[in-house]
Image (tube, rainbow, N blue to C red):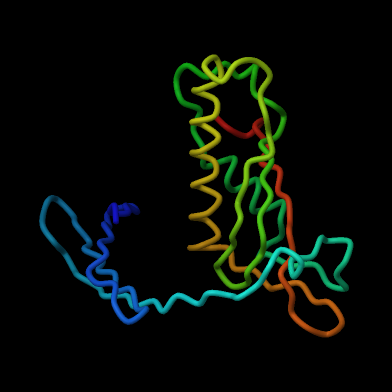
Length: 171
């Protein structure tokens, strides 16, 4: 597994056995290790098929993200820096994604909905940039923006949601 980086921390997967994943966080400052923290995560896989995923119109209570969906979209947009070679005039007004709310800090089936006109070769830089937005969305939810699941008939259910990341805030 590739290392993850966040600020001054680097995450390494140390062990993956008995369905337990252990991560170590080494806080590095001025090229010396300041502290090491161990995190343990037990992955929870939800058993479901496509028919158990509901659309927003089918549920009684929509999934809710802490701070609201618009706040999450704006936070992601403000954090993204446009790479060199991206023509702002060719960017769509929003970059749209669809995903399934698992609850807590977990989403699945995160798919890009936005398409660019023209050949894939011409748009390669834009799709790579959309991948950067994808990764930022997933990491924000995993670290800062937990979800409450949707409710149908008094039971928590999986709901397919959409989010539009506005490009006007990206610098």
